[in-house]
Length: 240
Image (cartoon, rainbow, N blue to C red; front, side):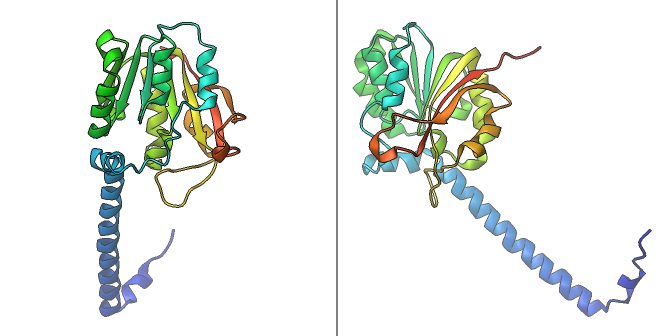
């Protein structure tokens, strides 16, 4: 057993000085933590993203459906699949799917400005009942889907939410439903976007999905060539 009697020999002035310094450290640490937490929330809120759409600061938007996703969509035969696109942005993927005759698409975005634009842009399909455009936080959404499309949403959320993201995706998918999309295979300073690598990403998804495809994307747009991963993940059936 350790003997701590030597602590009794420390002069009170030294001991009290140490305690004071430690208390000051905790105050500074807690202030920094609060600021960090506020910044994380701010980065994810409506105001942050709406300002970017209003100011046309959308460098992540490639202006069309990503070639890799277009190729995946073109081999789908069931036009009635329940499809979710979270963090949908300008929804090039959704527009392409609607043009190909898909009838059950849900779009979610946290930006009220963007959602208002999309509701007008897609009014024809909204009125037909082919698409829903929701102003909502993805993590508060509920539903059941056969297919969820990932396109620059994972990289837009704070990295601390990645475990929750994977679990939420699984919860929203039907058994054997698929999460399909593109992830950045590179790192960025600051963020968003927040990047990473295959080795970093896999532990988030393995508890919930069968990793059918998790490889370098061979048909990225030229500016992203070599810096994207294509994923096709099948939701694991829950064991009661």
